[in-house]
Length: 411
Image (tube, rainbow, N blue to C red):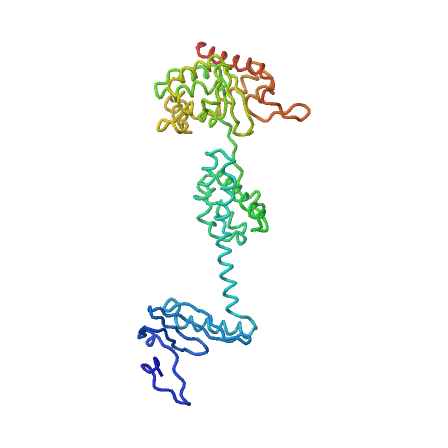
């Protein structure tokens, strides 16, 4: 009887070996060769020389004898192994091979893991991040990692329902970040549409959530358009006692009224001080933009050039000349001067320039919009060339700087 002799008496034609019990299993000892302990109905326990105990089911399907793995003891108990045996036998009776079902399940699990929301989202991000500004791409992946992946990242993208996405973005809304919730929902939609385009999803369920989040209360960027107050702020810029680089950035900011990121990432290679021009790729339109430099702007740049001109950036970071000034450098300086956020911010100078150039100085709207690096079209629907009306824009930018200079002396 071999291994059976230690726990039951020799079988006779009229005696059936008893089924395995917990007591029997606890007493199993491995040997140099693997051996089997039969339980019944084709179920047996394979004892490996390394001590591993593996449940197996021997069965016939068609004309072949086959073996099905049912788990490892003690993770799979005797009762669970018998339940799995009985379920497999029902499949065989129904004309289905349980081994093929198990194989299909494993393939499905691998496919689902490869097509989880997080895997596809990261693939979408990598394919697009080089087309975005660095600061924008950092915010997107941080938003996904913090607010989306913990809740739906591990789920197969084909199984995610609209309600699960809504629950995810409502967690963001409930902490008071309604705008971030909308952005997260928009990012989810972009990921789903990418999955549809690459054949890994049927549709974008975020389209069903239109109107599910409360609308974002739009707030205009803070701007001071009162000439007296604006003159006071400009004098505060001139009197700033902090970093000279930050002071120059604040002084130049209202004169050129570019977007904050474009100012802090300004590179010396893009400036031609002899021609009094600054040419760079606008962050929004992705087209070359020209900023005519007034005599006041040139004076600031020439004063800064001996300090930072040997490096890449006009306004380098205080920590490393290899990086541009941080996003918060100017904002922190404004607060240090006691200028409230509601009175002035980086974007605010653009609103100031647009309002005063139009309503006070009387320049044409199309010239102003072009200088703001907005998409401007002529009456025939054609986009203006980057050099369009450059002489008029030079005059406008000098007039604007002269006006700002006058505000500082008009107390």
